[in-house]
Length: 273
Image 1 (tube, rainbow, N blue to C red):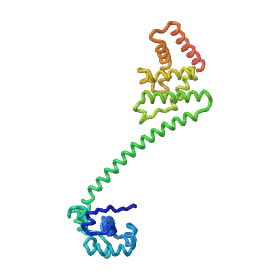
Image 2 (cartoon, helix red, strand yellow):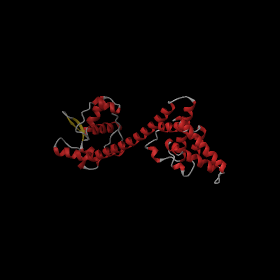
Image 3 (tube, rainbow, N blue to C red):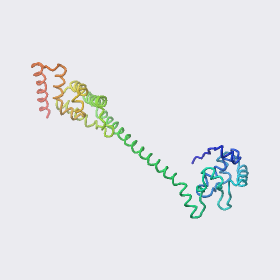
């Protein structure tokens, strides 16, 4: 355990102590909070970087000045004179071995204990929130990793790219707040978009066009937040996209062409099934 001494020069000057003498007194004060300081002279010397003999000389000086008191069986401790200089009140005198002294010591450390508990609870809360964020990030990364490891052929690479495109654009233009705590499962998105391409016979370039359009549409951008909703609403999205691109008035031939394209896709879809 680390240990350091903060020099209070007002107190040091009050007792006419050198820096080393102050450091020894402070070490004894710190190590005797639970009763008596039983550390050896060598151990105290290690604290402040002086020899055993120097520590012995300083202790004798502190005893003569009534700053430290000795007990041959129990060790050393600072006197009330030293304690009052820090605690500013005689009621904070560290307790003796008697019951009344023990109650006084418990009173001294009650506020310190409450502060430590409050700090611990705060750290625990921060740790839990941080852990949730880490888990969410890990799940998102895991989903992406699973998608990229599904296949390396051209069709599946296109689906992977479309899945990632949909995710990136939704995050950029919509940024659903629930994604921070519950990130989407991109494996499920991949499967829905793959079915849209393979079973529904929608070309990858058409899917990409719809994705790029839908995330910018005022109405649909808030409703298409997954691969599943993209597939479910694809025909409506496709027609609306083309209608918007050509203006409010769509020619009969253009409309028939779009409808015919959808019908052909549905016929191919039935063949696949």
